[in-house]
Length: 480
Image (cartoon, rainbow, N blue to C red; front, top):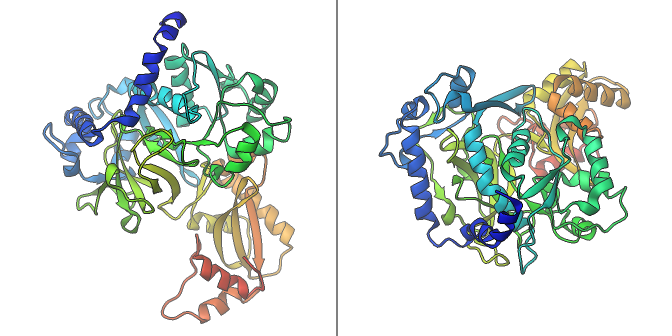
């Protein structure tokens, strides 16, 4: 379609892209969409293994985890999936450290997804309380990982489906380093309307080199530090950040909230989002869960409550998928937009993993492996995530069993992470910092802590409760 015709039909495009916010019968519309997906699923091997028929309802389908789909991904056969096998691309997500997870994502489904949610996200992101400022020919800057990450496929798909509406820069992003992309923004920010990058990149890499404030119609990020740093972001770009959530499993599935910085809507046109109360969170590595816990539909969530997402994207094969992510409902709608779709914010991973800037996921066993690989003599440790200024760090509270210079320990552990975990290395290179912080405890600290516990006490090595961590640190005369 020519730019002239697009401009002529722009008011209609704007209405089509934003009318979903005001739909009165969301539950009924979702039922129709999910039934269509299940009918298609019933004809392929994945659906048949799930027991799906053309008459199935969504709640008759078991919950599924990654291990259910893994055999189909590792040995793909024609007829296993909704779309022809040639339509699928192989993509990876970091999974647990050193063990990337493989997925097959359909190009057709991804294109449908981006075509639906992409323009809506652009319009809503630029809403200033009175009007949607997104216009034909606006320039959108992206500094996101490419290659076989799902974000790389998003970027390529957006170029193909929206090139007549928006100009995506840098044009040759696939051949640029992270720093070159930052340089591009610094040199061209006055010509950019919408920017997508991490909060750290904006505040640490850009703000220090550009005399602000600068003017953007929208700053969009999936970085969970957007909410606590929203005032600093607004001071620099002139408005609050717009937050989104997406994943390899769900593809692009949310639209930013305007009235709740750090919050977002699940786009009911591309995903059937159901929720499990966080107290009943399920194992994402399950095969099938036949006896489902209490399921809460999107329109029935309660403000202030936290939930694990059960995802059924309409445009790929994953169905009633147990996501490893927890969300908090912060509102039953967005008053600035006049929408009654519930607003969520990202709360935490449901599995016990340390997640840093959505790059690396580190669990208890792997920290032990790194310490062993680095030949660090230790009694025990507990680890948590901390944000220092704009950067997220893995903080390990470590008790050594033998004396060793602290600087040597830091260097050995960091180098072991760099060698053992590609995602940790990419994060360090991408953001230009050391994501590790070690806090050394006095000898005997964990022994004194355990002596005061009844039963069969153990050290919670990941995300120890704050009151218990304070108690541990008190035996080393350290304050939290």
